[in-house]
Length: 311
Image: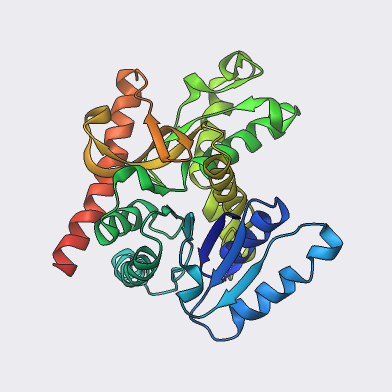
């Protein structure tokens, strides 16, 4: 029986995620959206690409959840973008309702699924999905670190004019201004970047990584990134469905690891058929640990606001 992945949200991120899953023949795809006709139209358009692209999977677009039953993975991308005049708390509460509803519907029909969250504010939405679904923490994962690390790798490769494939990087922490690019663990084919560029250049690239999403929004003006976020989510999907056991930086619910409890924070994890199969607790230096704590504190603030508003 073929694997099934549900993608909730047929906007730019969701549609690209669905298309990439189909193109890699990872699973049959169900694309869900509340806007009538949009998931059906995009799903059919992708399906009609199959004879040209040469993939044999089913793609179904729907406004409901019946078709999602028995999904192996559910990727949640649905949510509102931040609009002019909208505070961070406004966005937080609006997307809380979206993610809560989507999680309830999906979990009811796919009780054994693994949830991958993409909706922002990412770390708070992971917490929402965990509490709503009642799933074990291994099966609720946030996509952030893969994207942030990819951005860091991209900027390093461009700066040094080397292959993107040769750059290894690790970005921890919350998905936002307080993310923690770990320079000490970043290298080009094993060569530490500290030997390849000066401190000022490294600091510039670290800051550009933190501002990576905003830089794209500035260019697009009416939207945000979607190609790289979709590719990052699909790398996680592939590692789980193929039981590849890739070690990737993902938002995971910590229960004492790194001295952090009851929060989703980006850390290196092993992703396999059971979801998060291991959380790697690497030894951080004092400045790195302080930066990670600051990032976790920012996530804690969001969760505190949520608890006050919704309980």
